[in-house]
Length: 311
Ligand SMILES: [Zn+2]
Image (tube, rainbow, N blue to C red; front, side, top):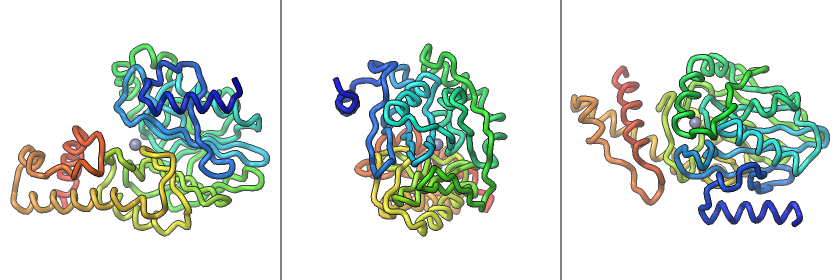
C-alpha cells in the first residue's frame, strides 16, 4: 500500500467515527491545506482513552531547509505518532516546535520532538503557566486517558516571544511569523503566520464548530480578535474545527458568541443576580452553530461573571 493511500484510509476511518485508538502507532491523517502546509484535524470530542488526548488541530510547515511543527497533541503517544507523521512526509530537519498555549491537548506530545533536536517556542508567559498547571494537567489526563497517557511529560520551552513582539523562523524559502498576544483564550496565546501561503495558525484564539472556552479574558479575547482580523491571511487553521476556514469570515461565529455572552453576563450583573443564578439565566447559544455546548457554556458564564463583576 502506498504511503498516500495509507493516509487516505486513516482519514476515512476517522471521518467515519472509528476511534483513533484503533490506529495506535500509525501516522495521523493529514491534509495539505496549502503548498507545504499540513494539518491534522483533532476529534471534536472530550478526552477519552480512545483518542489519547487527540482533540486539537495540529500542523507543520515544510521549508526548503527545515520543518516547523505547530502543536504536538495531547499525550506522549500522540506526539510520537505526530513525529512519525511528519517523518512520513518529509526528511528535512524538524528545527522548531511551536506550542500555541498551555492546554494539554496542544502541548503534551512535545517531548517526542526533543529527541530530534527541535527548539521549542512559546509565549513568554508559557513556562510559568506550565510550571503552575502542568502537574495537575498530568494527573487529570491520567484519569481521563488511562494507560494512553503513559510516558507523557511536560514540555521544556527553549525560546519565548514577548507580547507585542514579532519573531521570525526562516525555514528556507519561507518565513513563519510568531506573535504573542495579550490575555485572550489564555494568558499565553501564540499564533503562527506562514507568509508564503497566507496561512494563519490561530491556536485556540479561534474555535470553529466546537464552542470556545474562556480561560483568559472575555473582553481581552474580543479585543485580540479585532487585531487578529487585520492580519493579511488567506486562510486560518483553527485550534478546533476543520483543517482550514476562510479568513476573516471564520471569526464571525466565535465573535458573536463571545459578544452575546459578555452582554448577557453584564445584564445579569446589573440585575444583581448571584453567580449560581447567572449560570441558569444566561442562555446557551443556538445549537446550530456549535457542538459540545455543555458543560463549556456554563463554565464560560462563570468565567465571564467572575471577570466582569469587577468592571
Ligand atoms: Zn485551549
